[in-house]
Image (spheres, rainbow over the protein chains, first blue to last red):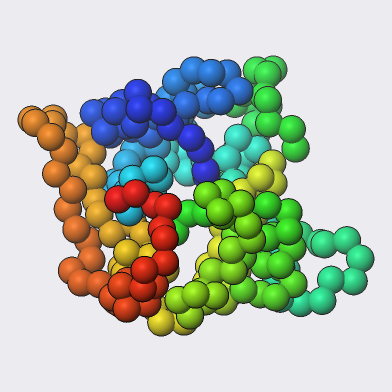
Length: 114
Length: 114
């Protein structure tokens, strides 16, 4: 998954060892897994050259990070370097969902428009 | 590395099979490797659930993507989940640079402040 952190989210990630993000839509700290139980335990945290981006390797309780229900948010592949004839067709790289998002999140509002 | 694309950069990435980004500092399309020769040939392009983020697996001519000279921009590790006593000390995960940035980029202005 890809997400945003502010300084507080990053500090919480470092001190607790669990990934915290900053929800731009909700304008609040987002402890990943607080609602779903799909907590991300940080095994490795790498930071880039100009220190505005971090890369986390995590263990995920429940084995899925995507709120849609897939293991990864990146569950579809784009064709690249080939002539496109008509609309792009995305290929699914995961065959089934790990969890049912309705069961996990219920009616909680989700600002992500799919 | 982490970078930004606009619609044109993404379309160029798809059609050419080489990673193109949008330089926010220079406000222009950035064909990665145009200056350095360190072109990124896209082997796989995954897109996330709400389609505002892509993940590229690339072959890099020259074997390095970071303008500082390292293989990866993420060449340092943050300690996570441990009590910090004083300033955080970053651990280098790469022992040496792949190329000399001065040799490759010369005096070209670089907006990234390290």
